[in-house]
Image (cartoon, rainbow, N blue to C red; front, side, top):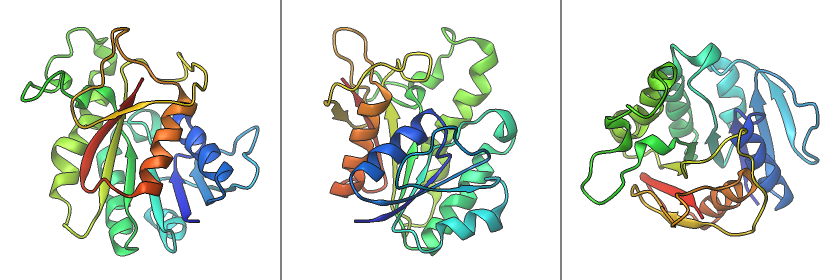
Length: 215
């Protein structure tokens, strides 16, 4: 079993990943600004600020796998990318692969097509900055990291989040940077995204790659 540190481990995706990994017997540390009302049995919770590199270092050092499940809003609205560069640097120093909860808009509708982030006309203007920041991680920042850092950017399907939590179906489909798009338009619940996410960690067959999970 692996020692997995989940940064942002009490958010929607992060808490689902913590629950899935702990249920499989992994040694899970969840790092976040606040503690959960209902802790996951078997998980260790550490409270701290992701913008504090010393606090990050304390939970990354000794980890076998680092998971980033941060959102580019709130306290991280202005420094989201900088915080992830710090996480990447620490994960590289720890020789731990970095798995990041990505966003849908960084995907493409078809091979060779522009990414969805290139046209945000259908998205509310209030979300444009955070959508662009999340996409920039996999478009610009992660590919520029040293080759010694093994990273995987894991985008969910279009309908994903606490506003559409869904139910565990026990299945998912995996794609690359082309969005998995079934006839119903694409969706995945938190538990099934977490299942696919932890499967990626355990299989270890994606390297410096962008993948997506959907039904």
